[in-house]
Image (cartoon, rainbow, N blue to C red; front, side):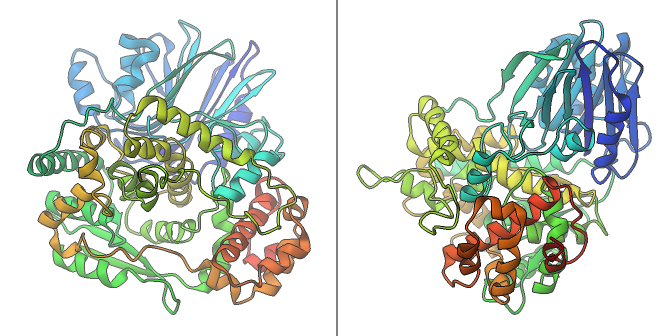
Length: 585
């Protein structure tokens, strides 16, 4: 796992110093070294390395015959198979990122179609004068672009494009509204003008410093719901999950997992315990002395049952107020999801022992775990839209709520409806298009990479997706029970997980923590320049002293935005505790 950066000029020599600044701005992603390729030509490439595979010879950029050069952020899990298929080639390293470089010689810009893994890749071929940028189908790994008159800059993090001088940060008001209403943003635009995401599964071909072609690879197979028998489904699921977890454990450095005690992380624990001769290293977060459900007791019992080495991390209000500015600083592509709090702190603790973490992200999306799927699948006229209600609806806080923030979700619904006939698969596809990559996976990427930890998500693997989407909808969602077949499988392999017990839900007590000092925090947030531009100050102050669930979540969103705007738009320091940062003006 790493950070990549680069520039493809329209004609002049690429600015190597600017690309180096981008790579250095992502040194947290690659604490094992920063490297630059700039030879006076139209392309410069930078790489900050976190060494996971091939510790000795895996430094990037990687080179091949004809001057071909590549930088990559990610892991190619089918690298051993790809190497076997190219057995006549004289590979120079053991790096899993060398195989895409070689396969380009066979497939050209179509080489990403062969890759099983998570990746953001940049490959330059001087013979054809083309640069290929590609992102994995689920969007596990990020990649951002900025088009300038001189050419195209790209990087693994949006803030690197600012550090390189290719973008002067200004807010996109419409996307800010979407962020506050949804907690994430959809599509390829960020709340920062001039920066766009490469979309999940997208490959772009650049020529002469401009985008010449765009190609897309969908993460989901064409749906043929031909698996209806439970025993058959459980057998296929067991084989697919074992295959995926085994591949995701491939590492030359220590690895562990995040264990919440829920269905998805319990499934990962069960497979890791099966596949590892040594105890699984697991990390669980808890919130002592708060009203929220604490998952540590259940996680502890599961860990003890499988003989895991279990580490419990207690997160307090003091941790929240002390570390929140640094958490938000990591979220340059903003996600106002309070789960950044435990994810960031768990990653910090995990880094003391491991460099790779497996987690259960993606299980809800692939196996239909969300309650909103049940609502969406109800018969007419009882079915509900997948478009979520806005966090600030009816509160009178924002100066302009508008309705355009719903457009991204509506577009995802139209695309899913055109491809999938059954409503359940359609609902899952909507979440996989935006919610998954632009909230859950983005949050995990930034929070883990802020500490130099690689995150892996074995549910989001084509081997698993192929089984999940072939399941008849009744094996994914049965009456009121989501993830039905995954629960039945877990009931067999780890019954102590109690997969059919009522779900208590995971939440973070940010509302409780904010309410304890709501008047003071609200006054500081209302006075912050970013919030003052978009919200009524008196309504903001009132929001922070209100007790409703919607009010508390809206207060959290504005607190996040105030800190994000200060760091990523105003470019000011956010070192120090939250209230000191806000009070600094």
